[in-house]
Length: 305
Length: 318
Image (cartoon, rainbow over all chains, first blue to last red; front, side, top):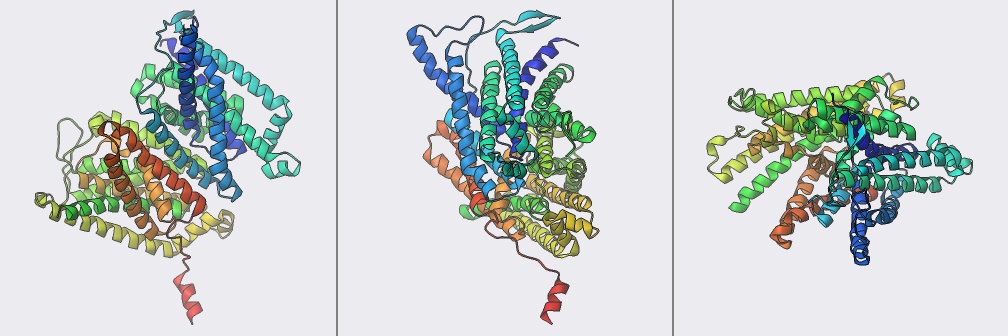
């Protein structure tokens, strides 16, 4: 067995974990399985690409378009990322206002909201295909050589950067959720929304914060996946099952659980590619999901439903 | 005359979608089970029927050359068996776990259709599936009309069967479980078993529809069973009216018509090199329509009718 699968799995798992955090938060606080979440990743990547393409031209004009050694991208991408995050957040808040929020207000069943999210995800994805076409796109055309990082593993600087960035974001988010009043309010709403409301928690504010965190992380995860692989309209859809599997494996509502779940799925996929074959990669998340449902439906860090 | 042949062809495809939609109505409309893997259950039926009825070939396992009717029965049975496995795993848990698991099985089965080449022919799929009334294939109008009559008869038979089941005690308990599980349980009904039965029945009907479709078109490939199909069928049921079997059929014909019309409109409006991209607008239209219906008319065009036991009805009359 080649140890390279470990680092490959951690890299893919970082993206899955970041995406799964947003999914697990909407699941526990808004109480529905959001099928549009994968498409938030794809939209985040495309929106950032659009901004960075624009900035790239601008920066090249200023003579600052060259890649930032040792990475493959120039200043355009890091500067565009916050803008991409902001627009992705606006997109989700807008979608909540016109669709999910409306259904919530009418007291629709959770499963109706799931269905609406399924319809919206198809529409969002096809809209991407219409606007940007289904041709894959790239943040950068630069080639990177994977360097030895010890223990017989290799990784590119870009890949190591995404792992570091994921770790940083997860630690920050963990502090926000455990140490701030907003974090406490989020946990209160996920325990019991009506009771939290009675106690004076601003439930609408918590819902907004949940979308902001989920969309922001989704955009970052989408950009990471776009940087390391490629940007396609279906990239979010292809990640959706791994995201769900990671969130359920970690236990719905658990941020560390989602991250660890993501890493486990990433590792399982990498080892499957190595041992069985790349054509079965997409089935790994399903197998993990079935195993979790059979053995421990509440997940690693979840409470029994 | 061309229009007649095309009209019959269009309606036959709409009829096969009606069958899928009727199956989904048993699961969702009557029982409240959210199946996001419809395409996979249809696909299992299609592949099963193709495997059973095609003549023997060297490239694949089987080709058993059995009659089409046997293929259809096999399609329904195998798809029902897969539904049973999925249902047994998830039906006890909260509703959206079934949604996620069926979504997962759709992806896993899609991979199987693609990768299990000795069984499924891989990405190229299975061709030369025997077609009903192949003897008159030269006469497009007669061929399409005969197929339409057959598909229409199947829809009618399934419709009558389901109407009967839904008015029978079994159907009423099913809706009782959907509306108030605890109340049904306190009357000694077993919600899990009932849900599982409904899920398996619905899955079997979808499998049958897959078989019917495969024999009508004569060719199947993994790309026919993408999540797109699931999405179309959901739009059909929600637009037509979930819980209402006539609504399921109406929705199938209507959404299929919108789909076909928007497709030809797009091919008129957009230049040839932009058409692949513009085709994605069709999906946007259906997706937005689905969301609008959920927002503004969640009961669909033909809402569910209250169905009361005929014995109870008699008592009121006299």
